[in-house]
Image 1 (spheres, rainbow, N blue to C red):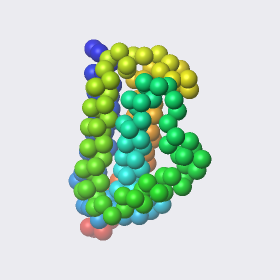
Image 2 (image 1 turned 60 degrees about the vertical axis):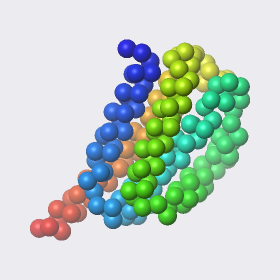
Image 3 (image 1 turned 90 degrees about the vertical axis):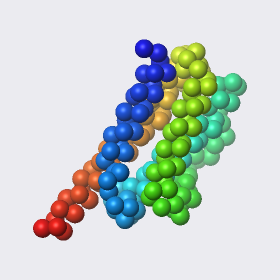
Image 4 (image 1 turned 180 degrees about the vertical axis):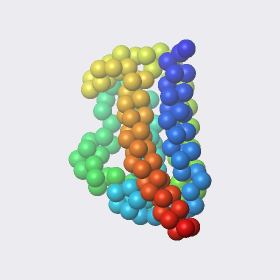
Length: 169
């Protein structure tokens, strides 16, 4: 099986776990603040969407030049502030709209990776700060990031469902 196929299957399996957990929740619960730290589930999706857009946007140029994108310096200067700003910029979206953007962003990333091709995904040390392959970078920087937040969302979903069961009794 190709690296691209393995990468896409892994990313899609991870995404499916998250989507399966939240798609049956009412929009009001997806928008409820304070269920994942200070954030709503919608806010977590906004956060994940923001990071995937950044990766999608810088990846082709970074592979071509090896240069570190300026946005990464901006983000690392005050990561919490950058995250808060990104989440706030999507606050006006309904949970349904945020879910749609979440999915569009993933499709855009997969399209960029597809266009870069198998050779690029297998390239070792594609830029000075990364020793592994591009595929490993995507798995760690996108997949692991999503998995980390997914675990928090799954715990929040369980708490929300428990609350709904208690209300029904």
